[in-house]
View 1 (cartoon, rainbow, N blue to C red):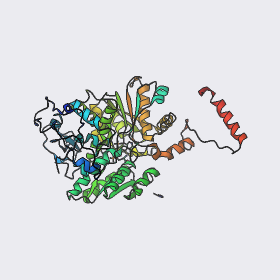
View 2 (view 1 turned 90 degrees about the vertical axis):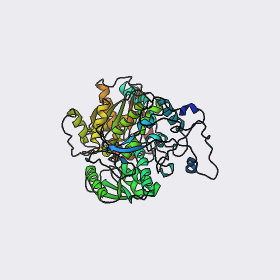
View 3 (view 1 turned 90 degrees about the horizontal axis):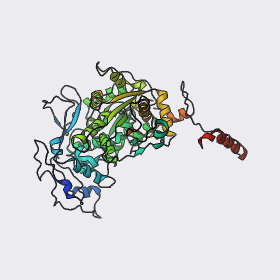
View 4 (view 1 turned 45 degrees about the horizontal axis):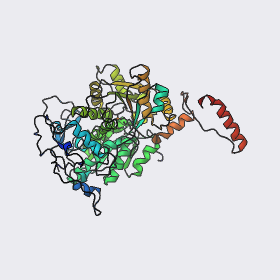
Length: 516
Ligand SMILES: Cc1ncc(COP(=O)(O)O)c(C=O)c1O
Ligand SMILES: N[C@@H](CCOP(=O)(O)O)C(=O)O
C-alpha cells in the first residue's frame, strides 16, 4: 500500500387507497390476521413535514405495521429445528458451525396479499420520506421489520438504474430484451451499500442498547470496505478494514482511508484476510461485517425485488450475477423467492452465477454436479479483482440458490472478461471487470442457445467502472501480456497544428467509412 426496542416498524400509508390495507383472508396459521395486524382505514392521514422538524422527526409521527418480526435461524435448517436467535444477539454461526439465515415471520407477512405489498413498495419509490427514500428501506417490513426508523443509517441507496442495453443486445447478441441492473451506480460505487445500510443500522441499534460493539470490521477486496467505512463514518462508529496488500484498485483503497477507517494492509490474499478477521472478531468486541453475517443479505436481496418492481412486477427469464464470496447470488434468490411466496409474482427467474476462470471454485463444483465435497482453491490474480476469492464463505448458500432456481454457473477467462467489458463500454456503458465476467457468461449461454433471442435477461453490474480505470487503461494501451486487446482504442498523439490534425482525421474517416 504505497499511496496510498421491538415493534417499531413504520409504514408510509398512501392516502389514496384504504383498500390496500385489507388483511389477506387466506393468511396462514400462527398469526391471526385481525384489524390489529393492519392499520385501520381510519388511521390519521399523513401530515406534511412541519418547518421545525426534519425527515426523521416526521417519520416518528407515522403509523406503523404491527406484528412483523425476523430472527436468525440455521441456514437450510431441518424442518423440526428449534434453534433461533434474536437479531439483537451477536451471533454469526449456528450451534453446528453452519451459516445462519434471517427468517421472517411469513405467517404475519401473509396477512397482506401480493397486491398490498406491490402497492406499498411502489408508493414509496422516488420520495424523500425517511427511510423509504432508500431502495432498501422502502422494503423495510421485509428487511428489518423491528428496527426503529431512528436507528437507521441510510444514504438512500438502491433505486439503481435498470438500463436497457439496446445496442449491445441487438448488435452483438441479437437480443431485444437485455437489461443491465447498475447496482454499482450507488453511494460508494458498488452493490455493497445495499447490505451495509442494514448491517450498520443494526449495529447502531445494538450500541444504543449498550451491547458490546466497539467497532465494525471486515476483510475486503475493496468494495465491502468502502461501504463499511462510509456507513460507519455517517453513523460515527469506528470501522476497521483488512485489505490484501496491492490487490485492490487505488480508487477502492482511498475510500476507507478518506472515510477515516482503520486500514490494515496485509501481506496475504482476500481469503487470508477473511480468516484473520473471523479470528479477530471472535476475540474482540468488533462486529463482523462480511456477508458471512446474514444481515447483509437482507439488504442485498432488495435488488431482486427492485428488478421485479422496475418491470412492473413481470418476472425476467434470466438474472446473471458475478460471484466471489457468494453471498449475493443467494441474496438475489431470496429476494425473488420472497416475492413469489408472498404472492407478488408467480415464478422466479433462472439464476446464472459468473466467475473468473482464475478464481472459479463454484464453477468447478458445479461442473462436478455438486456431487463431490466442495474444494476451496488458491485464487489467481484476475482483473476482476473484487472476486479473486478461492474459499467463499457462502458456498452453501450459493449451491442452494442455484439448485432452487435451476441455475447455471459459467466462467470467463481474463481475455474474455476484458473484451466483454470493452465491448460493453463501446456501446455506451462504463462497466467494471466483474460485469465483464457476467457479460461473458451471457455471451456463452446465448451462443450455446441456452438463453434465447427474446428471453428477458438482466445482467447485474456490481461496481462502478470508475473504480477500475487502471484495468481499462492497461487494456486500451495494449499493455497486457498475452492479451490481444482487440478492442483497444488508444488515443492518437498528434502535433497541435491544422495540417497534422486534418491528415489524421481524413485517415480516420476513410478507415471507418463503413461505419457511417
Ligand atoms: C464488484 C463485485 N462484484 C461481485 C462481487 C461478488 O459478490 P459476492 O461476494 O456476494 O459473490 C463482489 C464481492 O465479492 C464485488 O465486489
Ligand atoms: N468483493 C467483496 C469480498 C467480500 O465479500 P462480502 O460480501 O463477504 O463482504 C469485497 O468487496 O470485499
